[in-house]
Image 1 (cartoon, rainbow, N blue to C red):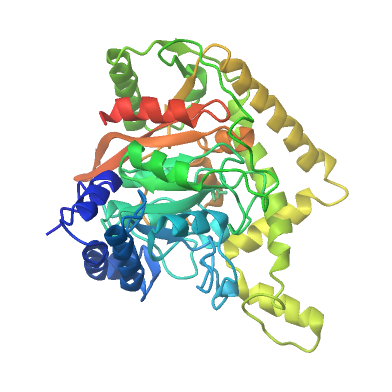
Image 2: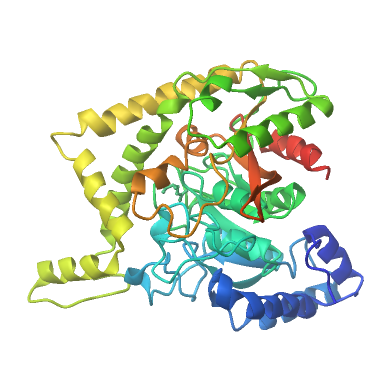
Length: 474
Ligand code: GLN
């Protein structure tokens, strides 16, 4: 029996290397767990039938001495990241039978390492949402309390890791979609610096915000995966080189900033604030200097984020016209085909954002909405850059509440959007941010995980990993 609950990449690697068990046995252990749990949790949309075959290839590498750190390591992959030859649907009806014709750069890097892909995970359609309830293929449940959401949009990936249905996973983060589900499921999630990881082969939601990020039980594993998938890529001109940013630190030990005014804006649950204060105390005991900082415009981040998100989503989703990809419905002419395919292929949230995005980009309102939002985006970025003159890490909770109940926020889209108050700033500014588990809140007899979010300077994932590891005692 392999103890999956405490297993890490390093441990699995050592065990496979020493022959304690094979990659096939490890993969089988996760497949067995998935068989038991997935019918209820619905983390996976598809479990790959060739997972064992992939593991056999990994075992060959252990035998011939060419195994890398990630050889034989089981990954769950979000359904918007392309793997050549496999379905990638972004949990949408419109791409139900779309097979990817190439690998995303992150995937080809993992393939070179010999990772094993267990399956593709559920998500909110086209990464629009925050609960994995907006999938065309049913809701994913939180393994800690199956009446609650796992967060989203990478809810399937986070639930797979938390539910021991995969060792680690990839998600994507446009406004919090790696960090928020990581927080709700009690695991670690990293949104890298914009451009650190190639977006080639990641279905575009908001191209100026999107990043692929790792989900794992420990910071050390998130770091290993990040190092494996990052790097400049000729296929994504927004990728950055190692030297693009050379972050300086304020002190020898990272100095931590807390934006108190931003935290006291109201609407944040008492349990979250209490847990946050405990985390601050813990960091103080670990010897960190904590400073109060101001982010005067951070409270405006949410409308700014959503205007830019709607605008870019409406333009990115225009490629799904029923002609080139996936679902096609025939009407009396091309225009009717288009209306029928898009009208039936997209879910409600995607349609809402296409409509709102088209509105904010329309000639009469472009200046009032889209241009103003972009100007505000720059001002918010300045706030963060200014704060980083005095501190190395900015600390907030990851979410304003613990995991909410399935259905609770479905009738009110704005209440769902408000969940993103702490996470969207990292996407607006391009800064790297990570959520680490910070404890639990007891709600109706269930222990619900909470997350602590750390944000660092551009290109300074290293400091995030360092502080994160100390915080978790790794
Ligand atoms: N909840 C945010 C949104 O709905 C973020 C989604 C994401 O990061 N993909 O846009």
